[in-house]
Image 1 (cartoon, rainbow, N blue to C red):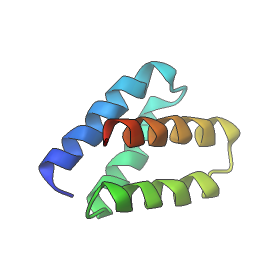
Image 2 (image 1 turned 90 degrees about the vertical axis):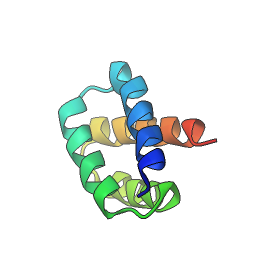
Image 3 (image 1 turned 120 degrees about the vertical axis):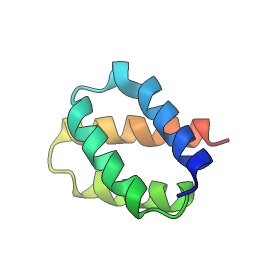
Image 4 (image 1 turned 180 degrees about the horizontal axis):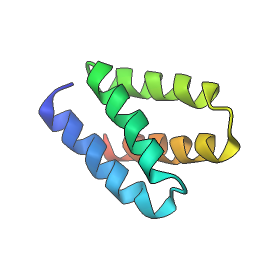
Length: 75
């Protein structure tokens, strides 16, 4: 992922922090996804896959909030 794209993603993450119930685990997931993604679009696909695999509703909700923030911030 390009540095400018990563900055957008991290800014969105920081904006979403007040709404997240488990920011530490979300940060770990996001770090893992950012490393593997070549761009924001691929990051969003990976995030959607992670949301679908999340067993816990709270984690799913937090990841969805984060995804929505990234979509809004990436425009």
